[in-house]
Image (cartoon, rainbow, N blue to C red):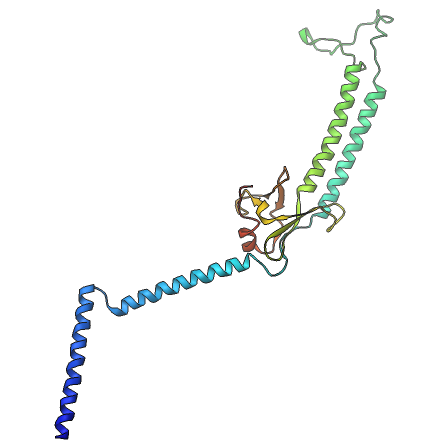
Length: 250
């Protein structure tokens, strides 16, 4: 009797397993995919979603550093010292030329009546282009003097603007909310102009890989662009692209 009960229990258990296996095979045939495939797809989706969330978290964390980070640095003190010497020399030269024009040119109009026997001074050109020139008249003297001063002042002004718009260092402060733009100076590193503004007021209107020589950086409240030399050291290119180097309508 005991052996018969054991055999009956084994037969019942085997029949249940066969029924479950047949039902599982029929369900997989009807749906067109096996449970292993479905579970693999679900696990792949979960894995990809997890990687995307991890990438987003790492990106948001990297965009908000726990300490000040130098994004860009380029010291061109030697070049701007030479530029200052050149601009200063040009200003001295054109100022001297203006002083010579103001004091050296004399009006010859009053002497024409006394020297009427002499031929008038002309341009030396024939035909309709032949006309008398009095370089000492007030119009020529004042015009030449102002022109020389304007050229000298323009050269100095362009040099000063280029120096104040060339960037020495860009710093992203702790938390990623504030940015400091440090300009070049002929006096050496650390003597340039510092501009600290929120990150939302800084934008690049051209990607750093698209620019050939300079990266134009726009700061709200300033008319001209700040220039980042491509020869400079990009300390953290990825962080620069997602913070300072990103385009924002300002």
